[in-house]
Each structure stands twice: as structure tokens, then as C-alpha cells.
Image (cartoon, rainbow, N blue to C red; front, side, top):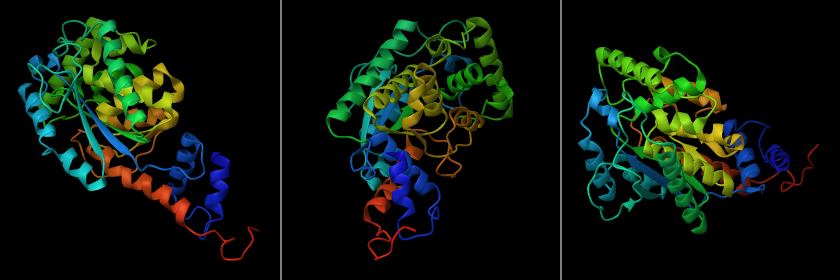
Length: 332
């Protein structure tokens, strides 16, 4: 189907390859959906939310309570991802898979596995069973979206401190040194970046995650919302749905999913390249090229939502442009 799509693109009324990455996007979409004319009319962003015990180590510029405040902000439709999602006609689904918010908030899907991870600088963030349950939450969410006709899922997340487990996951799964991976997250200074690096080094020494066992790595130095996104990727791959990866946290989840199921990479699109240094490494590890370069580092799914119109543009071009045959010319 990808070959058929490439032939269609080459016979549209333009020089071959002149639409650049839009053509490659369209060809990949054709392969995923099994048609030369893919469609992305129904889109959704899944915002997985969870808290992190490692915030007790002072790795974030914001207190843990901000996670709960932002969950309410999503529900109120006032967060950045809500604004951008409204602009592009994308539904926002907020899932609490592991926050420390007490009780249930209206408008939030409460699928809490536990109230935040443990401090992974002192021991495992969670048990393998808890990680599997969080993954199952993501798979279940995608199944529901698939039944609603959703064709593309953007990965979003919220969890104060979650660039720390993302860097830890990147270090273990790529083998790259932490000095190349640890970033400023919510805006910490150079001294705190060094402290954050030392905390992750301690976590890796304490937990000794097995790089050949992605579930072990995820459970020991990951996060509940990250595990939820792993499930979203795996579920989407099973259903041949498009997955648009956001920033470093979503990319870490995507790489874990790819290590669990190598074929999952086929449905992934990298929306943008964030300012977090681990993001570039993670995308390279998956062979993904970012669509946008906007120097963003917010998360929430903002970059992924912004990239959706680019993917839709590719679908429209291949379906609505004339071919040379339409002009009475052959394809020679």
C-alpha cells in the first residue's frame, strides 16, 4: 500500500518529491491505514496524569501539588493543550492513572493504580504488576477511542518531576551518559541540573534496572503516567491507529513501548523537538524525525496537537489534488 501511495504522490500535479516530508507522511499513513487515501478526521489527545515520589529529592522547580491543580485546569479547558486542541478540533481526554489527588474530579477518568510512585532514588518507583496495570489503562483507553472512530491519538501527560524518570529511562534504554540527557525540566538552574543528575545516578545504582527487560526498567525508574502512555502506544499499534508523540516524556514512553513490541514504531510520528536534551536521543533511537521545531518544553500533548494539522494536510493533498491523468497527460 505504501508503494501504491508513493506512485499516487508521484503522479499528482507537481514535481516528484516537491512536497517533501508531507509526501513521506502520507505514504506512512497509507501503510498504517491500508489505503492510498488515509483519513485523520477523528483525533484525540490522551493526557495521562501521575505524581512522582522522586520530587522529594528537589528535582523540580514546582511542588508536587501542581499536578492536581493542572488536572483541574485541564478539566476547566484552560490549559495550553485545551486551547490548541480546540483550535484543531481535537478531543481532550484526561486520565488520572497515578496522581495524589484525593477523590475523583468531575471530567477526569479515574483509573488510579496508586497515589503516585515511590521515590526511586530509594527503591523501585513501583512494582512490575503496578506498571502492567497502568499499561492496561492506556490500552483500555485506546480501545474505547477506537470504538468511537478515532484515527489518531496524541500523547499528553502531566506529572511534576516527570522529566527525571524520562531521563532515567533514556539512559538505561539507550546506554547514553546522563550528562547528555538531563535537562532543565520546569526551569531549574545549573546547580539543580547537576543535583538532578546525581539523583538519577543514585536511582540507577540502587535499582539496577535490566536494560533488556523494558518492564523492569519502567517499573524501577519510570512513572505511572508514562506507563499509561506505553499502553496507549501498544493499544494503538494493535488497532493500527496513528500515534503522535509529544515531548521527552511521551518519547520515553514510546521507546519503552517499542522495546516491548518492535512493530509499534510503525505507527509513531514525532511532532516536534523539545529543548530537553534526552528528547533528541530518544527520537533518534526510534528513527523518528520531528515535524516541528518550536523550542517547546511544556508537555501536556501541546506539540503533538500542533502537528495534527500537518498530518491532516498530507491526507487532503493526496485525496484532493489533481493527477496528470486528470489533465489529460500520461505518467511517462
